[in-house]
Length: 455
Image (cartoon, rainbow, N blue to C red; front, top):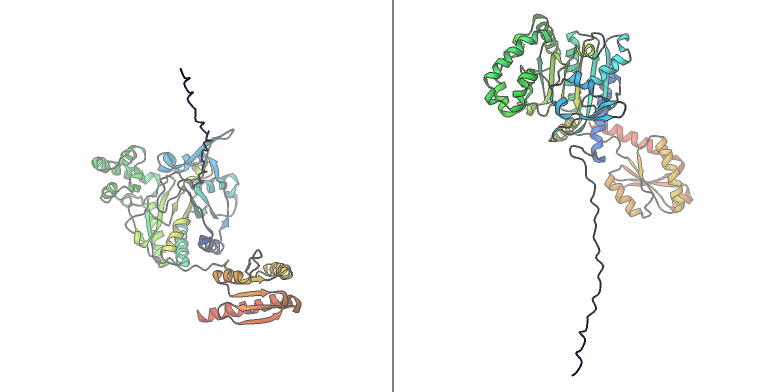
């Protein structure tokens, strides 16, 4: 019997499995934003205008820290406010307790005023700030979790002329920026004493409309009734329009204060709109409150560009001596957004005027030296020393829209000269290399004079 053939096994090649891994590109956190180089001219424009106003009106710069004790804002802003209840970035710091990334700056300014004994300075004390704030609210148009504010604060005087001056500063500030079409909304919320009867009347009215208001407003009925008028919910807006007006409940002193504020504004020919339902969202406000709206937003304050008011009790509340005060905060992102929306022309003061081109190693050495000399003379010059091709360098000069290109090649190095090309007309001239800075200053000065004549 023949032997059975062994079953032949076919060798199987072992294939190494390779796991393809791709690294995910890191993304921005929700509610945060990069401020790109193309946007910087707007930021520079607003910042320089702010500095000019601060200097012109006698304000001194103050820079409070980003981190503060949580209790500072709980006491000042109020437990029943949305900021304290929902929006603060807070965490426990070992040995420091609960700390907060500042959601606004007025409380920090008041803390600094008390800590550093500023009450002993000549009053009023005028301070301004520029910095980042943080609120963990729902990101939307005009609202980010990290944002910037500019603020003007006047501490140590209760004269209504100070209220009017702060509002006038804002009016003039936005006109200087080129945003003429703004609406100044103004109201008085009185003092704590004259608000008591009004709040009782307000609660009675809202209880009769309880079925129509949002869940947050139902909570506000018992926790913080004045915030009922600050709700942006559409159904609550309808109820608010029929609510009692606080202006009818002001005592004689608060009414007199408010009348003087609006009289000063009238004398300054500043247009404003009396808004009886404007209360602001923070507990520390007293008497005058106001907001700056883009004109097309006159039916709603969701995109207020700036807001402020008087806070006469805050210094005492935080442990200082009784000190009246008034201030305003400007939303920088919203202001810049409005500038872009209105197509306000903003000059980029950092835009280069000169491009420095070179061909060859010796020319590169000379242009490196020339670049430093021009920079020291404050001539706005740009270059690309990494490129050797004259064509690619001049293409970049065209993209940057510079007025002049300086060209230095081997021949110019030997001759001790440099070529100046007018990038608009294409006209070229050769000048002494040692007179480059002097000649350029003349040309740039002549151009500036010609532009002013045209304007």
